[in-house]
Image (cartoon, rainbow, N blue to C red; front, side):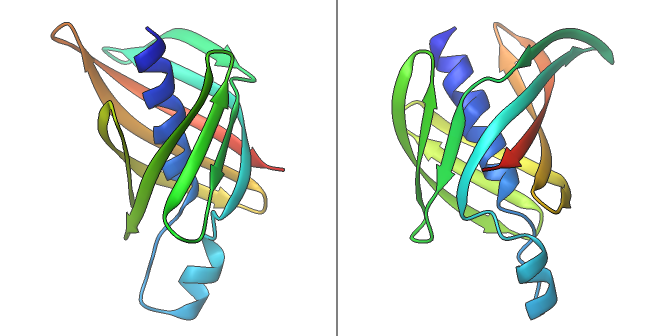
Length: 130
């Protein structure tokens, strides 16, 4: 479960990195470098909300493509990259690709699918830049 939580945090952090479009306006619109509080994590199964987790730690995204996630289980490091609306986060546990769906002011939302014991869940993470 700890690995799932860390992957969720990492995925959300990646969401924060927003779209890397061709224009400078797009780049400015989705600047995720900095520290983000995980406000809410929603986990869905077959379209139904199964669990909501609030105030679940922080992600720090560094400009050099590295980052740190801090939660109640400790601190982990990761590497990230952004291509279009896809944020890829990699740590020693594996890789998660997050689709960034919203970036407004200091708020960001991203989603990804996670498979656990042959069951696929949809995860939506909401974060605030601090």
